[in-house]
Image (tube, chains in turn yellow, orange):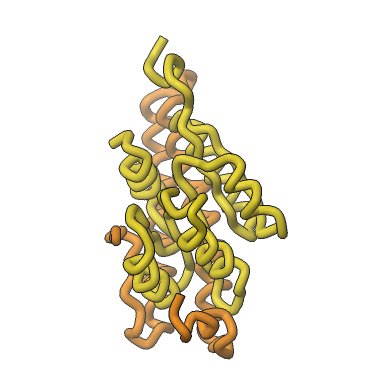
Amino acid sequence: MDDRQRTPRKHVFAVNSSPDFLLIMREVLTDEGYAVTTSDFEPRVFTRIVMRHPDAQIIDLAPGESVGWDLLRRLFLEAKTTDIPVLVTSTSPALLEQALEEAARYGTNRSFLTKPMDLDELVRTIREMVGDA
Amino acid sequence: MHADDETHAERPLDPLDRLRHDLRSPLTTIRGRAFLLARAVHRAPSLTEEERARMMTGVAAIETAVATMVAVIEGIDGGRATDASQHPDRS
C-alpha cells in the first residue's frame, strides 16, 4: 500500500466552461492521486465549493465572460474560501496579468497558467499549492 | 475590490481577443490529449520499444505543431502578449 492509499486524497475542484478541458483535468489529476470535482459555471458552483472546501481550486477566465471573474472575486473575498489556493487559467495572457494584480491584493497561494499549458507544469503547480511538492 | 473591477468582462471584447481564445482553446485540448496519450504509451506493457518510440515520435510532432501554432497566435497579439504559461507566478 502506498502513501496515496493510506492518507485521504487531496481534493481539487476545477471550474471551466469547456467540457473537453474538464475531462482532461479529471484524467490527469485523478491519475496523480487527487480526488477531482469538475463543474461548469452553474449558479450554485460557489456554494458547492464552500461545502467541499477543496485543497486547490482551478478557475478559468475567458475573454468577454464575467462568470469566471465573479467566481474568482467571491473566492478571494469571502472568509469561507479566501484560504483556498487558486490556480487561474486562461487563453489570454492579458487577463492573467489582471488576475495576478488583483490576487496580489487578496490572499496568497495563487498561481497562473496560460493555455495551452504544459500539463507537467500544471501538475507541479497543483502539488506545490496543496503541499505535496 | 477596486472601482475598476467591473471593467474586466464588461469592456468591449477585441475581435482579436476572441480569435486568440478560439484558436488557443482547441490547442489546449490537443496538447492535453497528447499528454495523456504519451502517458498511456509509456505505461502500455504490450508495446515493443520500437512501437513505443514510434508513437512517442508522433506525440512529439503534435507538441511541435502546437508550439508552432502558439507562436503564430502570439504574432497575432502584435507583440503585446507575454506568455506566462512557463512561469507560474505566485502572489
